[in-house]
Image 1: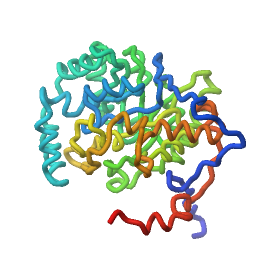
Image 2 (image 1 turned 90 degrees about the vertical axis):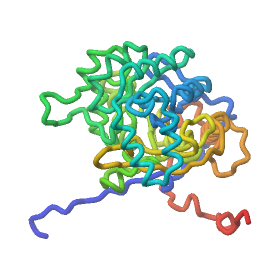
Image 3 (image 1 turned 120 degrees about the horizontal axis):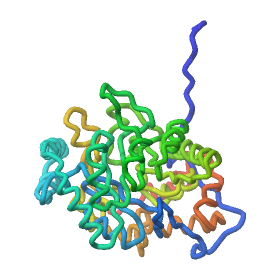
Image 4 (image 1 turned 135 degrees about the vertical axis):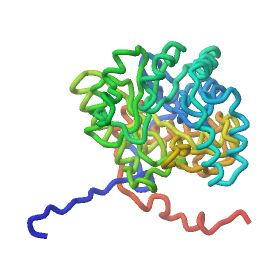
Length: 381
């Protein structure tokens, strides 16, 4: 190998690889503050619902607002292609996994309608809720004016991987700095996993950055493309970029860990890794309020040529209220996520999310198995 540089690999960590170290001082959970500021809006809880057809419809967005969080509507999905998407959702839920992808691909040959984009945003706004909608870079220039005119509060520009610089054969691709001159609503951008890309995106003036490539339960980008970084490492990388940008500019741009979050423990580890908020799909897809009928699929599932998502069964086994606030009798950490966050912050002596971000974390791959042999041996039979 003389004369050749060996490629070095760095270890990257996911939620199951790490543990949070308790603090020297503990707090009553009622003393902690967990609010989130995005643009000019304040949210009581730092939880966002992912822009997926099976998770967020206008009704779910309204309910999420009522409990203090934010739900993002996928404006390129079934809600902007069909006056009544319920038959499509029922068909997707009724078929097997392969059939469901083909059903979605066929449904997505129907054009996106600007009148429906406006109608869905207005449905959310008429209830008094904050309206956030998601588009991919491909459609952003076309639909951003319609989205703004309809009264949306946030525009989320989302793709599997986002960078500030994108080369294409067109005269000029999407440039976030240019977009922000043309529209006057806050733009949230995703998804990134690295320091440099995140820093460059923040310098364009965006309001927040989504972190995560391929960790979602319904996403198959890691299998199809081999691309991704485990969420703890990705969040640490992007948090470092956020802090560097704050030192450089005096402007604080929140980062939102998006995808792969299953339990209260995952939520808490996201914040200790540096997140200001979390975005989740599957946990909300399992609520009675979600439109997916117990199923969930990734945003790239209907891609015509290379689907990078799959339909998964999550069941309808809880409510939005119980998922976020309890009460719960479930012992697997999938309900009362807000309570879990507050309790962990109390155990670590963190009054605020910013203080919680400074909590020590250790590499601990045995965290879920150490001493748990009886849990694994037991069954409900």
